[in-house]
Length: 427
Image: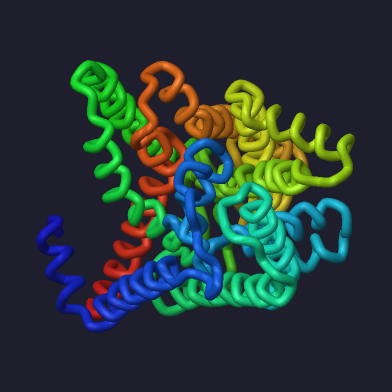
């Protein structure tokens, strides 16, 4: 079925059409909420402030400009993502939590996700307080009284919970991962603004740099597609087994391991972790305690250094790629499942030797995938350093581009799966 045939099939199928319309409706609600400011707060010069901060600028991009608008959903999906990161890190410390996440099936996952939802509320309150006080200390918004500050924190926290609920609704009633799609919507929403800024700051002498910039962007898109779709196929054979009067097995297949099994989550995780020190440092830089203010200012200056920021970002993305894969892919479980089904890898004994072999292959593949993700994450700083162009840097420089391409590929993959399932049912 060609592209036009697939589009025609989607338009004819009522369920698929309703799913896509629901996703578009959720996007519209998200964009509407992103432009509703917190009552009683007037933003003044936030765009320039976010343009000077790499971490906050990226967070503002992912929220679709909701942060610079001091919107009711100004924190975006950050509190929910951070709560999930913390819980997944805690699985390495508390065996009971690890068992709940890995061994108790769908019921355990649902309970684990519920803990994530509950943890989102205090994290959103903390981040809302830190951001509002930071804006106030920087003179970006007017002075907030205790009641105004309290009501604003409550509104922002409710906005974060609403956005979390909207993302889960997309996952349940639409197509694709709701969290990733909302981040994608936020990035896409900034495209017209970036185009406008590029036109206003156009300089004919920078034409070669713009050409180089877009050539690099095309190469990044090609690299993202290759790495996301790339797999290492491990040949698996199944022995012949006789059960009653029937014979099973006796065939060969492949066990695919993705080059980048973690997708874009390590970059989102790393961004969430990097956000906290910078936010706390900016908050404490206005402290009355001179020593504390100097330390906070030093940390802030450290994070604003492109080389240090880029190095930390790369390392965190690299480590989170290994960590997230270790949480979601367990070689011992795969080895046990193969053994139960009568499968084996040629030349490798079943059981622990198979698990060790899979672990070795996985680490080799992950080194390539993690290095690629880390390079993509710091690409905006590299491009900006070479070209001196700030327009489109976050949009096509690396992280945002990786998220957009990955989300589109995942969305299309799930959409095709839905179409194939319906064709099979009709057949």
